[in-house]
Amino acid sequence: MARRTLAALACVAAACVYMILLEDFPAREWDGAEIAIQRNYPSLYKLPTNYDVQRLTIKWHPSSLLYFVPVVEVKVFTTEPPFPYYAKDMPLDSSEFYNSFPGSRIEFPYKLMHMSGLSFFSTMEGEGFGRSKGVGKPVTNFLYANGPVEDVLPPDMLQFVYNFTDFMIPNSSTDINIWFNLYNTSALVHYDTSHNFHIVLHGKKEFILIPPSGHEIGLFPALHPYYRQLQNCSDKELLKFPDVLNITVKAGETIFIPAYWFHRVSTPSSEGAVALNFWTHSSEFWIMEKAFNLKIPLESEWPRRRIQGVAVRYFTAILESSLDVVNQRATRSSLLKRYAYVIHPSPLPSCTCEQFGNTEMECTTAPSFEEDVVSFSSLMNKINNTDVRAIYLGNFAEHLARLVVEHISEVPKFIQCLASS
Image (tube, rainbow, N blue to C red; front, side, top):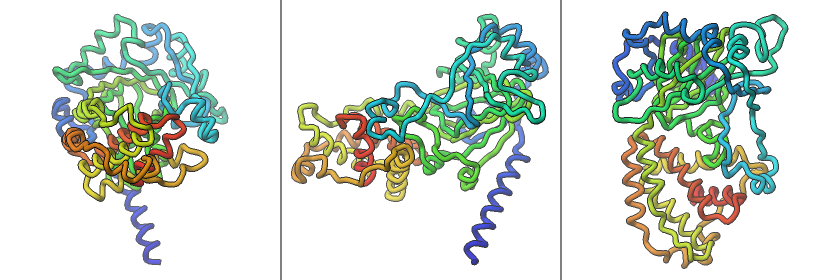
């Protein structure tokens, strides 16, 4: 009985923290993009004083945009939010995979439609396709549009976007996206590998954020079209985290989202929202680019089963060199969760090196790869956050699995082996 009471109190406390953060997260004065990145914690900012907020909100109001943006490529969802990001041509989205695991099939989550700027932004302004303010008129279609500003905006508006120099890091490339969201659209909880300054120019947006340890909830596989997104992103799951933040960003404000912080973005306001985001790759991203391009100590002339057996030992050595025992267990558990959700029927039982090598002798007498492990783990250990390391080690395990199996349908079994060794 005492345990139930304590658990109930903990839930109440978590909800109270959640509400306090929702109501009392203040917008701070802008002190520079580089300082925000060094701080490496989500922050809400007022736009720098050199920006005329009133002029900005007028210029980016839908009633103004309908005259300047001639055509908009719109994503149309017919299911309830949140909406997933879908990466095309991923290995787990193939007939070869679905033939082995037919219950895992997923459908492309939206259709694309071209709308005139006049029609789309008029819809943001009032009742129209996919939108209803009237009582008893359910919304049956949910619309939003996004993309690189160079693809979405006409040339005469681009220079205006490029004037947001405060959100660009010197000597670093910055990708700028624009977002047009109609009422009641939200994204699946996900992380980005880039630091993100998200500026709301019209309407408002709500952000729920949890730290990189959120990967323990269970990511979609890195080989899946929904990669970088959490499988179970209910508010109940998110509220289990003591550091959960819920921040409302209004027009004329920007939120900084550090790389690898999980976040859900929603547009609850009746007028929709217009926003820009500025992405700059994190140092962790560049470290892992180097790590993933290192030579893998496997020889193509070896029998496949020997390649697979040595790959198991190689991954195990990397894991042990990159994380302490507690985080190794957490990483293995998180890796298994990736496949436990998407594979139907459930993954095959765990396996050992010997099942993939011809004999135990062959596994244990494979050529030494100590130098390769040192090269990889020395890069991993430059990443200070162990949860970010765990995410990338999981991604590398999938990359390794795809490399050494003959058919994509064998990846789940090999992942079981890597996670259970």
